Length: 388
Image (cartoon, rainbow, N blue to C red; front, side, top):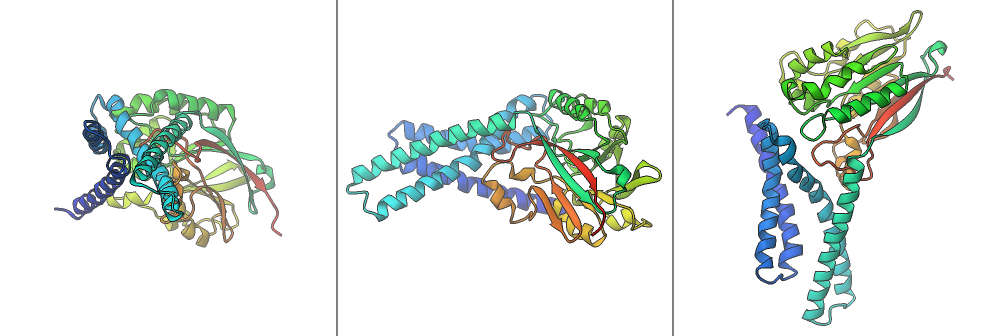
């Protein structure tokens, strides 16, 4: 077995084991501890087992490119979001239960069982309400988020340059042409100077998503539309997508840079591959190559899918880095766990002389849900500020 397949098998095994542990916790709190009577005990147990299987089943349908995937993956993807929400509420109820036990609230086994059933029902009800709110937000319209960024080397003539950032759209089985058309219309209404797409555009092959991606050809920007790869683009047949994007008028920046503006008032826009590209011949991030021969007196904006690229960007004098990848956590409280591997999750951050902006993304991945991490179309206004 190849190293790549071994790593994939290991990741899959760990993931399924963690999911199994979460489902066991759900079963323990909602079925075993509440002592559901027959036949409800067995029906509830069967339901939780089927919900567990629905997630790998949905991924299989998605990866197999089944013609029915866009209909059949919904239950598994929705439950995937609930698996993040329900255990959080159960943990809250466990805290209440421990508090009641500590203060002597259980004076008899009957009262203890009643409390367990009430707390379990409350967790289920609150999870359902929270999941509904998350779906409403996830399937809603991305908000326009305004961000001003001051750049010391930006020519005065380019003060007010408008950059519209899209990222993490994830066209695929649950996000299609209608969503893409809406994004394009709203972007065009902002009259941008530049549109940038910072990776994870697709979750599927060109042959399956050609129609969904077609509205990209209608994007209008004074100085062009630019794209850099994200990790999911590499999972989706990257070479075909790079070739197809060029037919839609989208310029792909692969460890290279271009000049933006009208001489003599210009700045550099660079883009690097996602680290997932290292597994593909000729791909992988190479910032040094992108910046080779650059005039350091010129302002520099970098497109990099993953925020952690900012560490190297700061060493190379990048003025502004635009990234995505994190979805802002997508579903709270996963945001906090994400910070363990991604120190920059959302919003503006300053690292040395480099400003980083991390978008929460314009679509979603997996669960059609967002909770306390709203999707966005980012309108970034560049401001020319004289050095102090």
